[in-house]
Amino acid sequence: MSRIIAEPHAIALSAFGDAVGAASRALYPDAPAVTVSFEAPRRPEFGDFATNVAFSLAKFARRSPQDVARALVDRARDGFETDAFASIEPVAGFINLKFAPHVWQSELLRLAGASDEASSVGDPHGGAGKRISLEFGSANPTGPLVVVQGRALSIGDALANAMRFCGYDVFTEWIINDAGAQIERLGRSIYARYRQIADPSFPFPEDGYPGEYIVPIARAIYDRDGDAWTNAPEATWLPFFETFGRDEIVGAQKRTAERFGVRYDLWQSEKELHDLGKIRQGIERLRELGLTYERDGALFFRTTDFGDDKDRVVLRSDGRPTYYALDVTYHYEKLKRSDRTIDILGPDHHGYISRLKALAAALGFPDQLDVLISGQIALMRGNEQVSMSKRAGNIETLDDILDEVGNDAARFFFVMLAPESPLTFDLALAVARNDENPVYYVQYGHARIASVLRNAGAGGSTAGNDASVRALVHPTELALIRRLVEFPRVVEGVAQHLAPHRLARYARDVASDFHAFYTECKILTEDAATREARLMLCVDTKNVLARALAILGVSAPDAM
RNA sequence: GCGCCCGUAGCGUAGCUGGAUAACGCACAGCCCUCCGAAGGCUGGGAUCGGGGGUUCGAAUCCCUCCGGGCGCACCA
Image 1 (cartoon, chains in turn orange, red):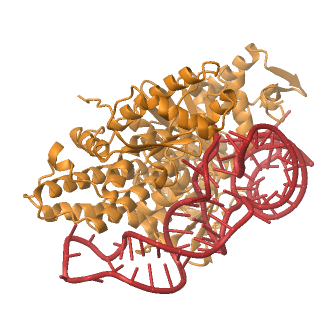
Image 2: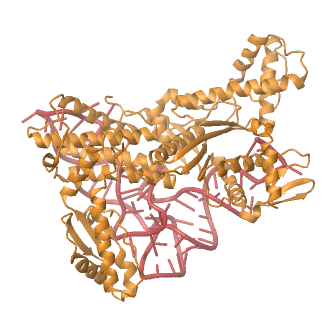
């Protein structure tokens, strides 16, 4: 059972906000009602929180923001009894608040009191009951996963984890583009390699997939069926080679994803949607809504009515549905069964955003679809550019990267920047065990705490209480607690703004605050109360770090 | 030509639902291990936030425009 304990600092803040609101109504009855919101100022000397209400009231009050802030504070102080604040100061129009140490001390007790559940580090509820559909990484089943997909996987999985942490009902999915021309090329490529086993002069298709990964697939068929397919008609062998190849390659893609720590709730086959008639139904749906017209024998979907820059064909003049028809159908399915629908696309898909948003709006789901682009990646090894051209032998697969740098570095580097921001991924840096490498900094923080806790041994009680926690007064101690308290809000921000990089930075900040505290304050000290309180702080910090890293898909080692 | 993404300190980036002297890491200069992991900490220098207009009490953030870099613009997927 998860106990929801209100946060002392939030209670105090809310009470003060109410007092300011009342003061505003009393002093400036003609001004519209203002919402008193608080934010953490950048500069620590401005306190823990600040509000800028005075600026919005100034024009109605016809006084300077400075005067208004001062008047609000004076008035709010009347009838507002609290010892929560060390200072309440109007400065240059802002109202700056600094909490008394006991507020942060209570926060630490609260964090520790709710231990061992997810809620031990805060209990965000923003997502309760909301269904999320999150599609990311999807690729043609024609080859192994490559580096850019690794980034999409990292971003998508971190988002999914963050949202689940906030209570969202998250459904992750991958669409397999196993219909159409690409899969046919795959089937023909495998067939050619198959024939070449017995007849090396058998021609390889000009537009075939030259990658080496095709060869063992052909070999597997040969080992199993021998020459059986050699004299079969194309109508027989082609579907077989397509399906066999798809299964092999999708299987390999799944294995790579799982190795990377990413699991999906659904691997949706495009072919299956065709076979079930879903695509036709999707097109019919558009027709019913009066959103289509015929021209030159093709059926167009009027996407320009919804912000796209040109209308899109859904049915070709030969009657076959386009890929976009699949988009329409599949997105319609996703939109219906979720409250928020998210696509993470590769960097070469910028042009798709408007047509996808258009179809969502057209089908009656405006503002429900978010399309995120995972930015391009330039691979480096030290100062050397690593070629990623798709010519044979040159593709850098995700597996290659994982072999070279490991999951932790890859996962962290891929989510470290804003999703759409271009990333230069330095393979040499990712394995460097020095301070240029951000992954180790955070993991080191976690390992260092684990080490302290080991040294504390059996005698090191972490059962702090009201009395012992009062020992925590050093600025680095209070700053660390304040940082830990932010955690649930940071995760909520990640989920809401689809910005997992914020969590990577936050983890770094936590580690940084811990290291500062560690340097300034001896944890395993003689004084029992101080030792207990500091150990408790260590445990909570470790929990937050572990939790943050887990969301990012990075391990939290106890020793390294 | 049109659309989208990016342009912030020497380098890599955060901040973009508008708020105070623009933040973080690396690099650079200096300092801190008789003590729990120095894979650490502290201090310092370094930025006309690509340029120019506009809106606002207030703009890196919103609007317009121009310039650079990238990616797309198929009855391919």
